[in-house]
Amino acid sequence: MRLHRLAAAAALTVALAGCVSSGGLHPDGSPTDPATLKAERSLAGVSVSPAGWPSTDWWSGLGDPQLDALIAEALHDNPGLGVADARARAAQAAAGIADAARGPSVNVGAAVAGARPPAALLGDKAHFAMAKYGYASFKWDLDLWGGKRAAWEAALGQARAAEVDARAARIELSGNVARAYVQLGYAFTEQDLADAELQRAGAARELTRQRVAAGIDNQIALKQGDAEVASAEQQAALARRAVDAARSSLSVLLGKGPDRGLQVERPRLLQPAALAVPANLPLDLVGHRADLVAARWRVEATGKDIKAAKTEFLPDISIGAMAGVIAMGGGNPFTLPARFYQVGPSLSLPIFDGGRLRANLSAKDAQYDLAVAQYNQTLVGALNQVADELSALQSLQTQIAAQQRAQDAAQQAWALAEQRYKAGIGSYLEALSVRQQLLAAERGTAALEAQQVDLSVQLIQALGGGYQPLADAAAATPSPTPSRS
Image (spheres, one colour):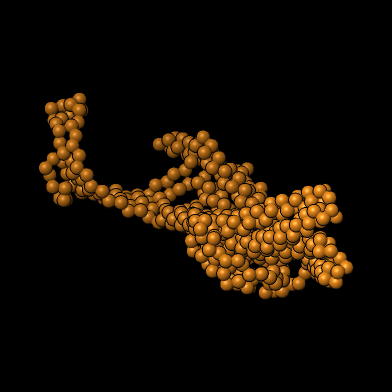
């Protein structure tokens, strides 16, 4: 007996020594600390305000009620939002499944079966008989190492990330509607200028024809006039097409057919949003951009997945019980002799699995590194996006000021040319040539002003688009790299 005990102990020791191990497996990624991303020099000279974050209805500050109504319509009808919402619901359901797996399970069943045992076993007593039975079972995994809880927390983190993604989709949609609306306004301005240029080119060509007929000019000047008219007609057609394209883009964003865009009236002249850079931008940006918040939740979730995978290497204890009744033939299963039951704990420990557990843990480590890399990439891109668009807006202010001086000079030249013509000093053809320079200057000013409004919308999106951090978002701050044990 003593020898048998020693042999059993030795066998258990060998078995435990041969158990699969997670040793040597660990993730390599590490979330970037926002404080290490320097932006002081890039943001120098920019107005700073603690309340610089965009409001949730930032588009109302652009001053066009039609735009407000279009964004509300898009947020209600755009089909793309349904995709994001469905993904969020699927992630929430997955979290519910993981949570349910932490508790005990109870099952009941009943059946009637007929069988005839082989004669080789029972001889003459072998005959066909009916068996009736019913049972109830109970099982509960004690989750000693917290693996199931970690799996639930991981699924919950993914659900929260999907919920933030749904909010991010709405923020992106509102910005895209505003930008398409700005483009529609600019397209209308381009159409006006193209029509004015066509009218000017036609008048100049007619004057040239009259001069040729009078022998003052030659056919070269007339052909040049024909070329200007043809070019102006092409630009007018292109401008009308730009209006149609902008309306079509709005129809898509609104989730409606192409006729919906035709109902959009000409936008008002929009002013760029007045924005200031929030104080402590690199740190606070993490909590005010939905894509960054979602990326943080995914880092946390994959970290919990690693913990859950590591617990699979450890012994597992569960408690199970079963009770039921059974009767053969025509017997009554609800009598005392027909009852049966069993109860007891069970222990499992992986000894050899062909490398499945290590491969699973290695995959979880890789998923964590991927989530960290995506978070770091999003963080760096977000901060640089804000700085780049601020720089672009500052440059546009300088460009618009210079372009406005050019337009003012062209306007004055046109006024002088008209005065000379009315005074009989200059020709109207000369005045129309000056008019062409004015139209070109107005076109340049309109393009820069539209670009300025568009960039201000992009900056709003870069600053989070009015995203309001959830109360539990702060809990998603990426933790250090999981333990390398």
